[in-house]
Length: 290
Image 1 (cartoon, one colour):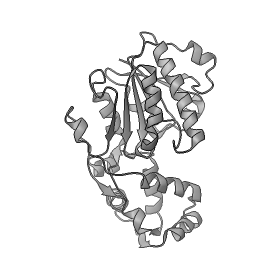
Image 2 (tube, rainbow, N blue to C red; image 1 turned 180 degrees about the vertical axis):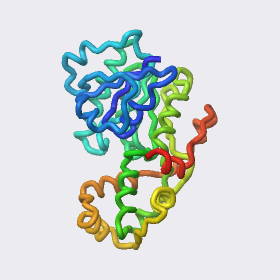
Image 3 (cartoon, helix red, strand yellow; image 1 turned 120 degrees about the horizontal axis):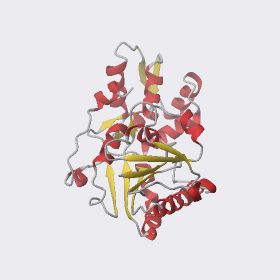
């Protein structure tokens, strides 16, 4: 199966470019700037890479062709958030051009992957997919974790500090983090010809945990001797503390907290009634995917 993959600069895109190309999946990744993509890679890509600009198009876009055609096209959201009009418009343009590129290569099946925080804007995405006439699936995922993820980098940094201030509301956010490698394995195992046609589905990891729980798992599995001391502070002081002592700028902290506060536990029952799938326990993900 020839698979067209876009959204390589996202965390999931990077991991997919290195782990989805196997067995029946022959992955063809496209990106506007291949040098930038390679500079940010976490692992060596295993699929083929091509320079294609989905925003401005151009010669590479017009001449792009995959021998034998494309059977599955996977688009991972390109922008940091769909909640800003500029970003949403950019996303709709690149998605439409991605669909056009896939159609030119004979593709009739599209999978659009986004974050739970993007759920309020799926009406715009669904409209584009319906108008294309292609069979589609929208997949909304809980926060993906593993080597190089935003949560992984955050946890490594704070555990290696002497003190960890936190505010209670943030520490008690409940969500179902999912291993990036599990999500990629799930994508590989879905029968896209038969299942989830013209549907929106949600997928999360096997356990509902809090941010505090994740911190404890990281500490237990990777830094059992760490002496970091945690204490509760009002949110406004937490921002100041992180900016001054951890060198995490205010914008990055706000982005991380915004992402986390849009998370919520997922019930995987709907798709689990259709396919068998087992998740990797969180402590193994934290310990092994480093």
